[in-house]
Amino acid sequence: MNSFITIADRKIGPDFPPYIIAELSANHNGDINRAYKIMEEAKKAGADAIKLQTYTHDTITMDCDSEDFQIYGGLWDGQTLYELYKGAHMPWEWHELLFAKAKDLDITIFSSPFDFTAVELLEKLDAPAYKIASFELIDLPLIARVAKTGKPMIMSTGMANKEEIQEAVDCARSNGCEELIVLHCVSGYPAPADQYNLRTITDISERFDVLSGLSDHTIDNATAVASVALGACLIEKHVTLDRNGGGADDSFSLEPKELTQLCKDSKTAWQALGNVNYERTEAEKGNVKFRRSLYVVEDINYGEELTPQNIRSIRPGFGLAPKYYDSILNKKAKIDIKAGTPLKDTMFD
Image (tube, rainbow, N blue to C red; front, side):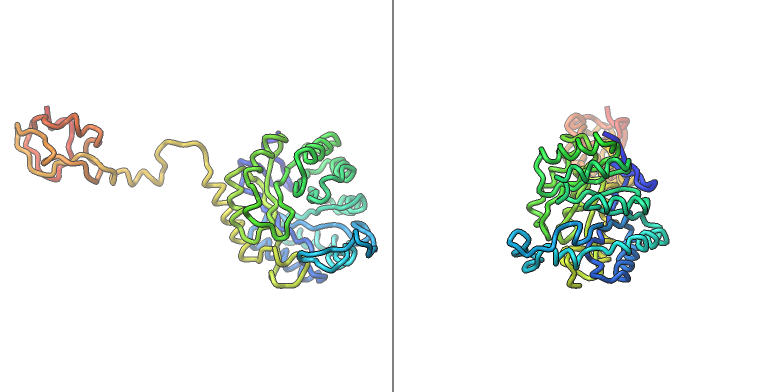
């Protein structure tokens, strides 16, 4: 396994701050200016990348109203697949404009292709990486086509079992992919946090010998921030301007302030991981004086014994360590010692 991969000169791995992808998805709601605004807010929030989805209603499904193509329940109840994707897709003529906008903003942009024609479009735009969506993880020909670009790949694993993930990883590697991150994901919209089983992130990394991360569909940041402690080096979240905006994905997306908090908190969580360390930290050094130690609490004259009445373990920490308390009792003072003096081993026999 690589210790990191690189997308547009940004290193991604356990030794680097979490890579935050702002998934624009269908939250443009048919308005390219809204898409631009989401990109601007993502940049302002501190996200590392914007991700698009590259398909049309004709490339991802077909215009058919038979039972197989109906959606029942959930966010998109009552639509056919064709109707859903017709309203949700990112117009292909926008892609060049959005890539140019990202360049102006100095934020990385790439996409999830859903068929070969999408890969061809994105290659013409020199996309620096590719994302395989959870629903496409079983499309091994698509994975092979993307792998052959030689670009870094990110895969989501929602709904996939161990065998399907292994097949996808093997397909990517056998077709030339050398930089791969596999994201734990629950394909619910939104997904309940108690179904996320974040310990799977560590298992993904170990089982498939890959870098691992999280594609998060919960409606807040707690799950994503917690994932960092389990080794997630990349976090993907849907973003929008307004969760009540009425778009296909708005209701389970982060608003700008929440994205800002995710970027901040995930980095803090990563910094807090640090290394295995039992040494005193810089933050602690100034407080050592406030530890307990042995102090003289009543005046002791020369030759008098040290007793529980005149010696106690108290704060601050300038005297002998409390662990010596039992061994110094009944020792005789070699000097007169005033109350409030830190006890030293030179003061008694």
